Length: 113
Length: 109
Image 1: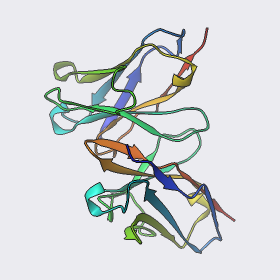
Image 2: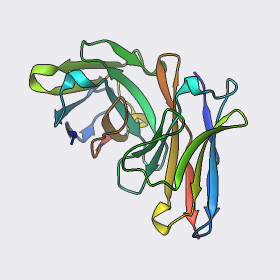
Image 3: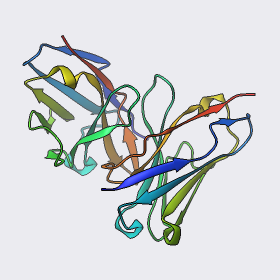
Image 4: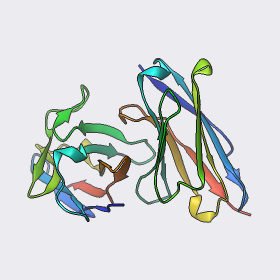
């Protein structure tokens, strides 16, 4: 059973950088690509990007310039950074396999001064 | 980037059948888009139901089925149960990225 556990701050100030990490258990990180998805309160889902075991990345074109992803297979975790955040980036952020069969519980990140 | 549009809301009677669709702003949805479907209940992460247009996950009840219908991806719920009341999202693979649909709120009433 694959389990994904997120960590990272829940409150950010505008113009700051959002940083989240997803720890993987129950699966080899070499078995999947790994994705990030977010959901603003009361709204729909938005795919942010994905990273392969070798570090190849895929991005949502609308966020490409602000998103950075990394992977640490030795430590079974992958990470997301989103720069220059605004209130519009307030959302529940999820990590998931890129088969989207396993998801984290999500972290609410609020951007507010 | 394509926009995937779903019905905002649908209502189905217990035991009834409802079909949700997922339309692309750039043309017909084909199997090459590899459409998937997800169910999301309040306060929970999405749960995958269907992948690769028609394939169920091991945990997906048989009353859920996926197809292509009139140039759209479709999810049919046959024999709706009260626990099927939820938001449903499609997801497609498009030009090296993924795009979620706008979501459909299904009410079982």
